[in-house]
Image (tube, rainbow, N blue to C red):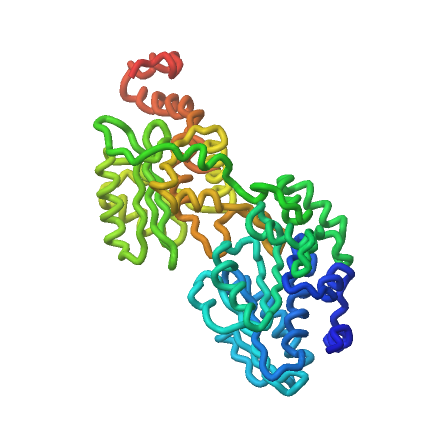
Length: 449
């Protein structure tokens, strides 16, 4: 099959970096490039060329950590088929993410999009070709135990594309492609090597992004921990679960379940040590309120800070009605950023103690996996990796927010000034008690409580 002529028919003109990938004969190709470099389009066109190659029958998959990510390459292929290969379509079922084409030999070629969040669905048939999108975010076991094996009996090829993310298994695959193994070839290019992008616009992003985030997302550099929001997580994971102690104060952070997520309650003590965690899902709101109220009552009526966004508002009201000392924390871009920044600073300074990894593996994994990412619109956000959860992260951040030592900040837009509040209350009460008037002349620090 003349791949160059086929691309011309599809009105696809690969830039030099993409062309090198298309010309490669390696059975394992690893592409570690910056955002908007053209990885998705390159992979889609390579997959279409494989699907149209003469064969009695061929099968190819596009796999990514989630369906949303797998859809990026799949939709690109759908669009090209709709524009240029409609006469080749045997069946196209959008709900199944499955396309069957009649290839150049009159045989049948099947294209399917798959999600790695359900590994069982990756078992079964042999593959002629495989595209893995956002490969750096894939768990190593998915490649080793579910995907690479699908290529053996048909001697199929794999194209792994991703923006770099730390130095995990994808980095090792990339390094292998830089060595002498003839079956592996790899490429590493920053975003600005795409001739269709505006270099000045990219440079403008350099000034507003953290250096390590820019280096990873645009510079395509494998920087250890470059996308991680929290550092020194395991260094802080030295604590054990603790029963409540009489007379001690405790604080709790509550992140409520949304659809497939979990409700998580994290309780910390006066030393900012996580002493207890409750985690559950698919439980009626009334039962959740009861569990939360029971846990907080046990820990000396721990004060709760609740994510009151969306469904959280009625649950917050229910907790207040049940007698809990609960306070709402509405989430906005600004308030979430402040919350996460505070937790990151506490971990960096070692002023918070987490349970040991063997006691709280889910929480430690969530904290280590929480990352910076860049949206399609170019905005930076912090969130769980695709297909992951951040419930433990948010609940811990809400609990930690209440333990700031310098001042108590109820919300980024509302700062509690104890001196100002003291004076305001004294002025109010002085109307009824002359003794309060004399207190006005005394600073707060001199008052013995």
